[in-house]
Length: 163
Image (cartoon, rainbow, N blue to C red):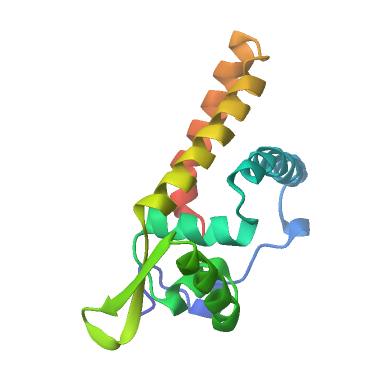
């Protein structure tokens, strides 16, 4: 059996082709994609204050919000090779943003976890991003803000089912 569905993995992993979707769905997806990229670029500018690069902050975020990981798990989560992640981890460890400890289940593996300093840097960065975003959303009318809040609610409700 292939889990909760009866179709083989190759069919489940097949992505829908744009031409098989309703044009209005593709149009919304296109606008949402563009807006998401522009939004992320703008809020990411707030990260410069931290003094950390995007790759380091992203890896640190995985550890803060996802808990301790092995090097391989962290590399997979960040979609980079283990040697690339090893360099990122070395820098984070040198700056005392992470701890590397022996995995309690396998002494050959190491568990990487964020330190309090690492968590603090990430939390302050998150606060800066949210403050910036809130300052921009403050320009919306009450109705626009309510509509945006509803759209965000719809996304949050549906994202867990996306693969």
